[in-house]
Image 1 (spheres, rainbow, N blue to C red):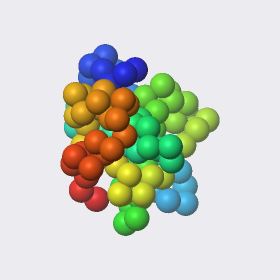
Image 2 (image 1 turned 60 degrees about the horizontal axis):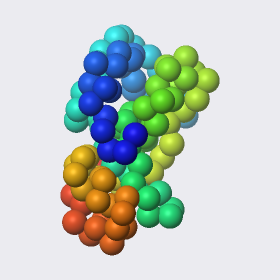
Image 3 (image 1 turned 180 degrees about the vertical axis):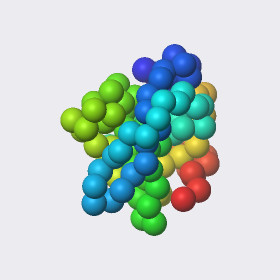
Image 4 (image 1 turned 90 degrees about the vertical axis):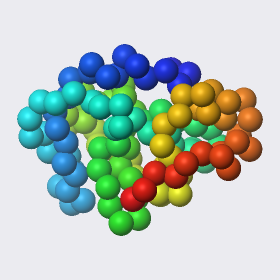
Length: 112
């Protein structure tokens, strides 16, 4: 995807609410908003484009945009990322971090 999630802005999914012991539950249809798109840092310091599905004290529950249909149907669940590895989405920075992981230091952490 190389840091360009514009096509997600019109992608229709169910409104998701996370229940730590019961997984994800669809409630009603809504559009993925730009504010739902975040950057996540993987274990190899690569940037990942993800959708924020839920929040907990220690982790943010994130999904690959390509997995949203499977999450909605209950076939998959979002993955918990520690808050220190979740950042506000910045398309220019995303592309630059792909080439230079040291730039993670300039990313703005997402507030829990």
